[in-house]
Image 1 (cartoon, rainbow, N blue to C red):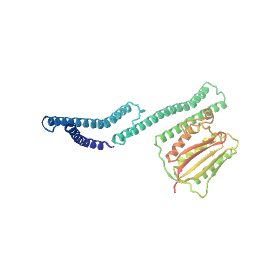
Image 2: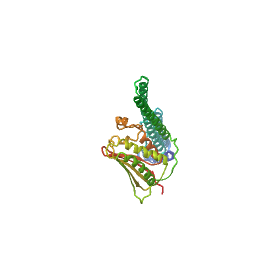
Image 3: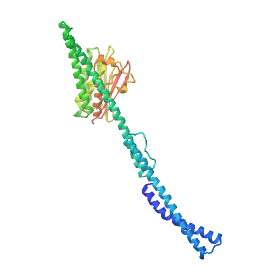
Image 4: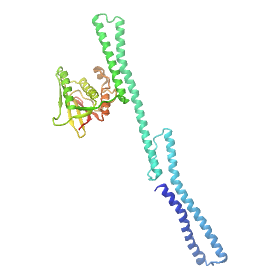
Length: 361
């Protein structure tokens, strides 16, 4: 019941209950005084009856008003006290105490609104904490990945200065190592710059209609030439009767596909290397699967491979190179397209990276 209805009923009760009580007293007291006790309705007996009736009326009014006032005030003040206490705890940073209410009145709805706010603040606090943790891990990873090639460069420069590179062949080898490490640092900085612009949503997207059938025909042709040198192949599977026209930023889509295939090529551990691209049409989107026959990813690592700087095998990553941002960048680009990206992998068999793009009718 709403507070307004309770107040109206309380006011009505303060009038009706004393009247009904007075009528009841009139009958009961009249019967007791003039019939049961044999008193006469005149003189001192009548005066005593009138005094009793007046006292009973005052007592009924006082008790009625007191009880109704206590009930109404309690039903309003108690929830307000709980809300005040909850607001104080929230202001102090304590977001663990619930202030939900089962009542359907205005204060109950207000309490539930406070509860929704508390839950959202708690969720925001958890996200902020996770963000801070991720930021610290990101800074640590950046520091490590920049320091490694920098330390190597300093070592080779010191070797040149100390005369260790005493022959032209050694000098050329040292210079090649310095150039490679400088290139790795440059690549990492470019990846970080792109990642930060995507993270801050400062990278513009130029959407257009892209026919994925034609797009992957060209891409697979280029990839096949590369794999043929390593006795491998790249294959595109699609249905000629289906439409694979999507809305996408062609340049950003190139980055996604390149990052995924480069990641696959890095971990190809079989003599015969194969990458398959499989297109399938859904109701309002097109699904792309890029499948390899590489070493696969352990099940415990699959949910985290799209996290920035996440490495399933640090030693292997050091050997193969890479910034650890490729799949993170791919995820952010696909999400900016309104799609989803995920992975399915079996160790020793291979990995499939799936992503979806909105279909254009």
